[in-house]
Image 1 (tube, rainbow, N blue to C red):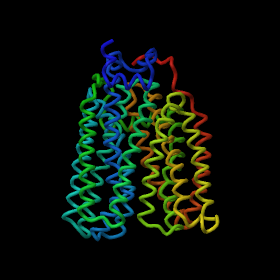
Image 2: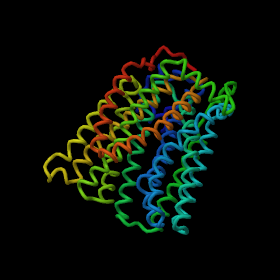
Image 3: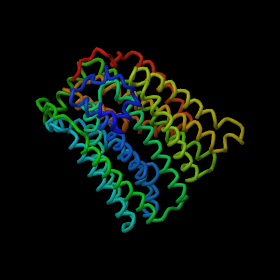
Image 4: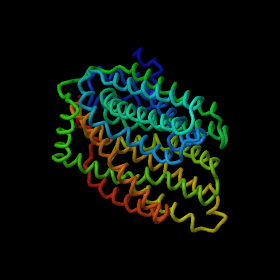
Length: 444
C-alpha cells in the first residue's frame, strides 16, 4: 500500500516486521492505523523530556546553582525529595479530573508547558538572584516543576495506553529509554565541558535549553492523534481518593504489584549512595560525577531496547530479573571499598558498577511501567497509575528518610547491603504476580 512508503510506517515495520496480526490489541482500529505516526511522536517527546530532566537535574545542576547563589547548604537536601515525591504524591488527586477530558493529551501538553516555564524561571534566577531568597525561589520553582511533572506523567501513560497497542508499549518505552540515554550522554559531555565551576551564564544556558526541550515535548504531545475517550469515569479529587483506596483493598493483583514496586525502590535509592561511595573513596569531585553521567547515558542506550522487548513478552519477569540485578550491584558496590587501594581509590570500578545499576534500574522502570499499563484497561488505567504513583511518592519520602538515617548511622556500605536484601524480597514478590501480556485480550 502507499502508506508503506511513509518513513514513519517503514520505521515501525522495521521494528515490528510486516505482520500486523497482533498490532491492535487493546486499542481501537482508528488508533491502530495511527500507530506509526504516534510511535515517532512518543519517541521525540521522550527525548525532549529526558534531556530537560538531565539539564535541570536535582542531583547535579540545581545543587551547583544553589552553590553559586550562596544559598544555605541545608536547601540542597530538599532538592531530590521535592523533585521526586512532588511529582508522585498529587497524582491521585488529578487522575479523576483528567478522566473528564476526552483527549488526555492536552493535560500532557499543559504539564510540559508548565515545566518549560518553571525551567525558564530557574534560568532567570541563575542570572539575577542570590542568597537565601534566591535559594527559596529555586525551591519554589522546583515545586511547580515537580507538580507539573506529575500531571504530565499520568496523562502521558494514559495516552500511551490509548494510542499504542498492547505488546508494543514495552518496545516503545525501551527505545524511548535508549534515545533518552543518548540525551543523557550529551548532557554529561556538556557538564564535563563546563568542568567543576560553571558560571551563572553557563547554568542559565543549560536551564534555558531544558525549557526549550520541555516546550518541544509539549509540541510533540499536541501532535499525537488520540481518539476521544470515555469520560463517564471522571471524579472529583476526593471521590478519586475514596474509589482508589477501595481498589487497593479489593484488587489483590494491584496490591501485590504495589508491594513489588515499593521493594524495587532499592535500585533508585542505591544509585546516589553508590556514587557517594565512589566519590569518597576516589577523592574525585565533579569530574567523577561527570564520568558517572556519561556512563549512565551509555548504559541507558544499551538497556532500553533489550528490556523493552522483554517487557512485551513478560513484564513480571523483567521486574524479577531487575531485582536480582539490583541485589548483585548492591553487593558489588559494598565490596569494592574492601579491595586493594589501587582499585578502591579509583573512580572507574564504581563507574562500572554504577553503569550496571543504571541498566538494572532501566529494567525496573520499564517492567513496572509496562505491567501497570497492560494490567489496567481503558476505564481504570489513569486512576490505577495515579494511585500507584501516589503510594510510591509517600513511600519514597518514608523509605528515603530511613535510608538516609541508616547511611548516617552505619555508613553507605551498610545501606547498600540492606538494599540488596530488599531487592531479594522484590524478586520473590515479582514472581507471585500473574502474567498480564496475553494475546487473548480483546481490542479496546
